[in-house]
Length: 132
Image 1 (cartoon, helix red, strand yellow):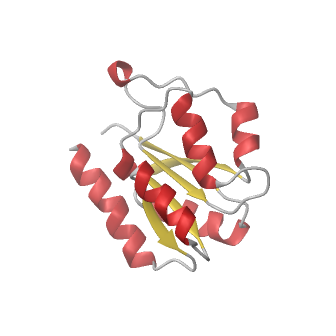
Image 2 (cartoon, rainbow, N blue to C red):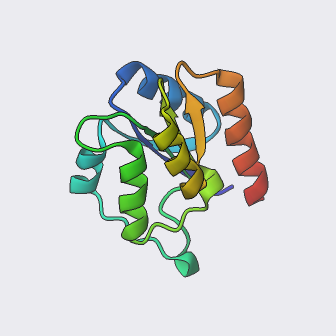
Image 3 (cartoon, rainbow, N blue to C red):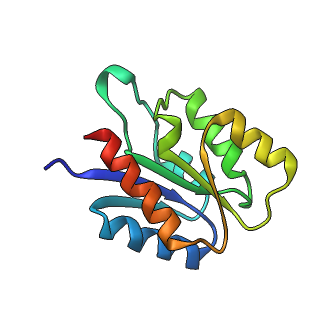
């Protein structure tokens, strides 16, 4: 069985730890970063549909210092990340209408904090079942 990889970017350490544990329990190798800028300084996204994806799932907080989760997803997509929309989740504790509209345009899954573990678990399970 091939190992699945997850990227987790969130400045909320408690949420990041909870999500990392959930992803690890579901068989993902998890790379965590406290903010998008740290990730972008350390990694270069060079995904191409013909060669697969760098990650099987991307999870990001939305309201982070330096760059929002929405801006982060837009930035990595402009750099060539072609991960399917349904495999990207963005979390926030207070969604506004503008952010929700942007999320809908991106096609990503959005979740409210505090998270409902069963809801996130169902999303992660659905991702895996679609990839089989």
